[in-house]
Image (cartoon, rainbow, N blue to C red; front, top):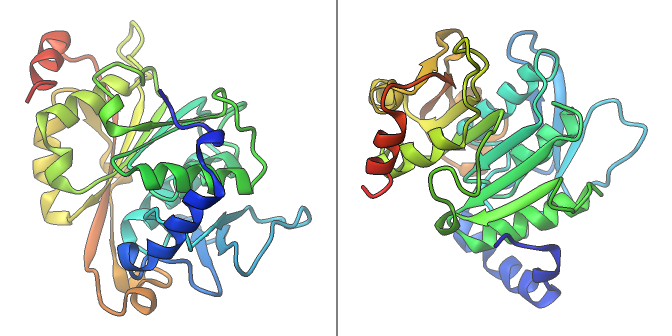
Length: 283
């Protein structure tokens, strides 16, 4: 069962707000916001602002994503891994049509909200998954701040314990996985993420896309070894990014969080896929 709007009440939100600073430290939206750039053209594509200092203005030509930084839910755009996912969404805005998107490890909901603002596809449906129920509540609240439709046709949220290979998430055009390498490479996680992607057509093409972040450059080989049987990696989309090159990172965290990278691939036809997924799901 997913998290509904009705399940988030004011008392719960106040409780979450009171503990968020301790839980999430420096991962907050700076006062002047975060600018999301197209890494190819270096042009401004969107901006993230805090609900404390801004409201959406219909006249703005640049999409504005509002995040309530008083709520738990990791993901403000100041960490290199989040920024890399955001820049990938920007790159898709003019080249792809995405109808179904899953943000696995949704945190604040910033990635799904950005995808909706960038209009990656008509009637885009976003699914958010997280291991923290507080993050799911934060995602719902931040989503509602933008007056997006709140029906299950627009947004569904699931706790990670509700998700098994192929259910309730499947046939996704795009999956974002901003998750640390230890969790990403567990066989059970491989099974869940690969099974969630759209199956390639009869020509072996047009399988679902997956964007991995949350990994260090020296962890790339381990990731590709874990997923290589089922994912065709696109080396042209590989990007490494340091905290010193990420807007707001050093200022917000107060220290250098180091170098991170983005790895993108597409689901391919895998031999013995069903048997592999069944075995991996219990590991």
